[in-house]
Length: 169
Image (cartoon, rainbow, N blue to C red; front, side):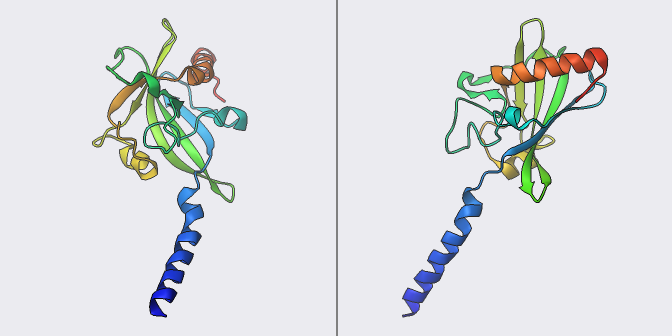
């Protein structure tokens, strides 16, 4: 009787915890900041945000070839040119009750002469590492990657506009 009751309680605990363990929050907002910008760029359009899910790529169960803002299929690369402006990209998740929670941060560089963007996932001794691995451990922290072309199509015009006009949205 004791083992049956214990088994039943264990099953109830597992079933009760399952939704919270498997639920992956959606990206609610992306903010880009950088010295080359006057202010910050905010991306809040749900149609755009749907493409840039924190839960895509290494460390995720689906392990997509493109996700977050990275083209994971191209693998790790050497650091891009130092002369390129550096931006930080902040990903906020929907935490429910009209609340947003900072969930992931990467560095981003864009070379307008080649049209290529680069993304850096902070390593264990760097800012934002704790925030990132508190959300998802990818196993590629401390590395540069090519940016996903879908991200570049969104970010490059916004950055160019913000740099030229000082207008951020």
